Image (cartoon, rainbow, N blue to C red; front, side):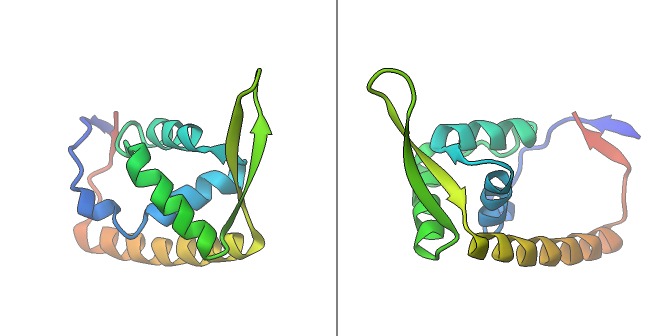
Length: 120
């Protein structure tokens, strides 16, 4: 397996899948906004570098759909953070999205073929 340089990703590829990525992070643990941004960046090897102005409207939409709830937690002196928690409805939706993504990505890979490289 060879190592490939990080490509510059066309942002249109991320559109429509961001909700799945956010829900997946929150399925593992409750997080606050900037923690989500940081984890997404780290786990994607800096390919997904989301800005706060993009994240918070998405989180609000997911909460409106009943996929997330929020709560506040004191951290340090007089500092409160808003945490996001995945609901059962969000867990069910994530499972559907992951299934669909697996089918889609397997089909695309079948058409494109694999080059066997791992992003570095």
